[in-house]
Length: 382
Image (cartoon, rainbow, N blue to C red; front, top):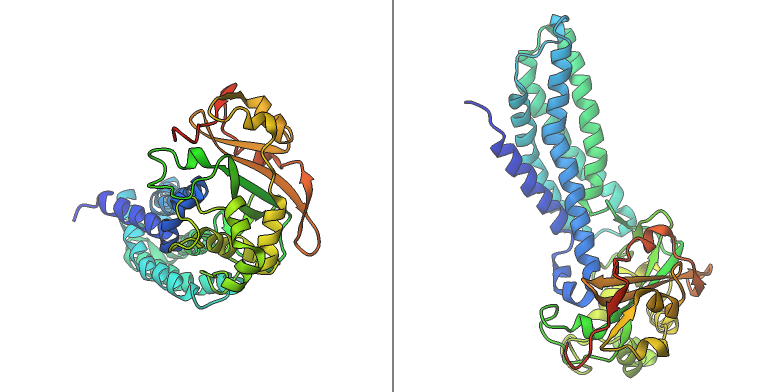
């Protein structure tokens, strides 16, 4: 049959979405709670997976086709197959990676994060090998003599190895965030959400526990290389014990770190704290109580001159200066509405946050309040 790009394109695209959007399907229920961070992370995973898979499906066949074309003088390497043939072979060879991704997801619930890397290598190596055998079996008869087959096999194995080494990271969503041993990080980012914007019409279904001004979003361990540890517990859905919450003080948590959607005593009132502890706190090296206390202790009260602008416009530079200055503060906006403030904190050997520090450039680059004047929504009109 005449080869085409339709099948390979959709297989590669479906696998990219499959890889990017299934690391933890239960996390989707937190998207509205956590704002844009999870969405941005998943979008990064999607773009990362698409880059790898499209390069493998279309780029590698075109490269091999180019190499064979440039070697026409050496008949032993001449390949009697079009680029479209190679694209079809590479595209359909991806089918074996679907069960590998499913197996990765299932086993991730039972294997400690520190073993995920090795596990991904083993699981992804199997379909990589099957894919290579599938391609070579269909190509070898179209190559002249043994020398051509050997050259093609070497080129194919090299491309498969490069693909394998990158895809096994995506198998567990390690393209951006990573899993590490406890306490292996460089600094913290403290994110504080502006509640009236989070609860504004169209951004959240309903806020029954809305507070005034800025409240804690989370305290996130980070590396200076622009990546961050994530979910450093064998239990990928670690929850906080009721006794820990009572010891720290649920009323205190609800004041500075509230779940805007659900008030205390209602179903799901601890979801935000559980999620932040599971995803970020387990990578801090602190106990659950220690992480909650450290997060509450790091809270930055809203400066008076910022409070005076609630429901009004405020100069971007005024906002940043009030919280510490351009090199220590990141302002996140939705259009021209302020949605979040982030600051950077050092850490000591025990993983406890210390003083405010200058934010690395990759953190500052997250700021997207580009207008000279930005708006702090009114809690009455949001």
